[in-house]
Amino acid sequence: MPVVVVVVVAVMRGDGGGLKGARGRQGRGAAVAGRWRRVAVILLALAYAASMLVVFLGGGAGGVAVAGAGAGALRQRGAPAPAGSVYRSHLVLDRLLPELRASSASRPHPLMTPQNKKSGKRWAPCITKKLRRSELPPSNGFLIIEANGGLNQQRISICDAVAVASLLNATLVTPAFHLNSVWRDSSKFGDIFDEDHFIGSLRKYIRVVKELPEDAFVNFDHNISMIPNMRTKAFSSESYYLQKVLPKLLELGAVRIAPFSNRLAHSVPPNIQALRCFANYEALRFSEPIRMLGTNMVDRMIKMSSLTGGKYISVHLRFEEDMLAFSCCIYDGGWRESIEMENARERSWRGKFHRPGRVINPEANRRNGKCPLTPLEVGMMLQGMGFGNTTSLYVASGKIYNAEKYMTPLRQLFPLLQTKDTLASPEELAQFKGHSSRLAALDYTVCLQSEEFVTTQGSNFPHFLMGHRRYLYGGNAKTIKPDKRKLVALFDNPNIRWDRFKRQMQDIHRHSESKGFGVRKPNGSISIYTLPMPDCMCQRAEP
Ligand SMILES: *[C@@H]1O[C@H](CO)[C@@H](O)[C@H](O)[C@H]1NC(C)=O
Ligand SMILES: *[C@@H]1O[C@H](CO)[C@@H](O)[C@H](O)[C@H]1NC(C)=O
Ligand SMILES: *[C@@H]1O[C@H](CO)[C@@H](O)[C@H](O)[C@H]1NC(C)=O
Ligand SMILES: *[C@@H]1O[C@H](CO)[C@@H](O)[C@H](O)[C@H]1NC(C)=O
Image 1 (spheres, rainbow, N blue to C red):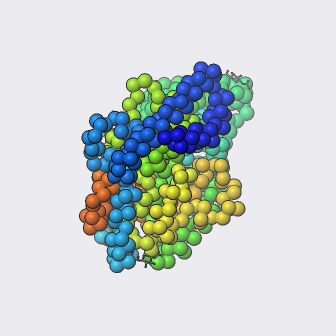
Image 2 (image 1 turned 120 degrees about the horizontal axis):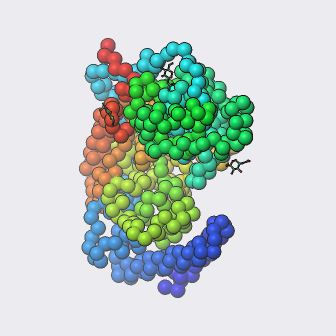
Image 3 (image 1 turned 90 degrees about the vertical axis):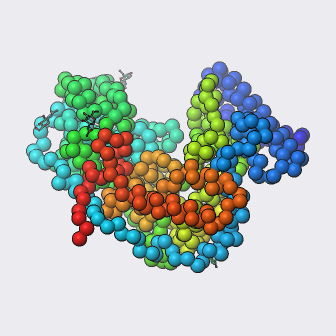
């Protein structure tokens, strides 16, 4: 025991800098709370270490018993966890590896086999047909919005703002971006998107200006905060804007809506919807530096995929520290992981996970398919689907948690794996470093052009990519979106045989393909950004 204690204390001290830095911003009460929390973390670690020692001395089944302190406490002592509760994919891989290797060489590659063309209708973009075009009516005033969130949440705000500006006959001021506490990116609109292209391509439909003009600004003492902020509810209807926002706009000559994210209903009149489509799929394109490097990265990816006819697959891996901490899932990192996750939660969501009444159940999270897939799990899944080691794989992600440890198995399964750091040189990436939205835009560009796109966790990034890929590729997203509830049960079964595993993965793959064509329900909960059909596309009979 004493040895374990020394290690834990040393780790805590090593992390002191970050805690101190955070405390500087807080009052004394928070500092005391922080200290108590730190004590709690140490106790948690000690409890964990002690339980490991017991497992060890008692000759427990090694990694199989690694359930984590939080998880163990929530289950009846001694009762086995239901299938899918515990992370032990690494043990399953160890077991399946010989068979997996043996079958890897001998099968037809899915990227090289012609896909079963679904008979029947194909979809094609037809936005301009749906747009009403006439003389622009006189402007009722200026609409100022502020977009919050990461790259794709900003994208929602921008496209919705275009729609609202049209609804109100307002002149849109190019949106400003909030500095987000998690993404911490100070980029402006023009750093990420091509502003002149945006304004120019919308010219026939709405007026867009880069800044509020002087003669309007002077009415507000040159102070944006003096323009009344219309707080709107999420997914407000067109009638809300016409009844509540329009009168203010006419009265003051300008209104502001901040933050403006998901502030317009999914269903709006067809011509307004078409404008939203147009904004997303045509008017918004990345700024020139992003497009230039992005195109080069795609070209390099195609060159490196010569074994599969220039085709590659892309994976959106959500395995960053913040994401894992937020998910409250437990992996195979032991007490060190528990401490790092607890610290990350405190850093980004101070106190949120310790509020009274908040129940955190990592085992249930895993069973319910809420846990981010590890790189290893992604690798096994793709191998099971038939993608052998000659597949070139592009991995889109932020900074992977404990990358050395977690990426190694995926690289071993897919030696032709690339990321933006291997596809682009440090000099090329220098201007994007520290700007998570611009880096995400590079990932977006490479994923958009891939033969298949694998999403491992729901978020705006895969939702926008799925929609965009449907838009570009005749309506079929070619997205692999695994049912994680099914996956966890297979990954938590150390006795599973490769044949069965493979069959299940191929089922998931087929299912993804047949779900590729999806049509939006008029009053459903899905947006045109994920399902552009039928709002942004038209059906064509197969020739
Ligand atoms: C892929 O696997 C086969 C069979 O295990 C092996 O012979 C080959 O060298 C591997 N290829 C690469 C690129 O690792
Ligand atoms: C916007 O302009 C159109 C075309 O002139 C007109 O039909 C519509 O009523 C106007 N809407 C508003 C809110 O001013
Ligand atoms: C802008 O207006 C806000 C709200 O009235 C005020 O608090 C702030 O001090 C003003 N800023 C400047 C630079 O005048
Ligand atoms: C959608 O919902 C709105 C209001 O909730 C309703 O007015 C409209 O008729 C509905 N449209 C369809 C197609 O169901």
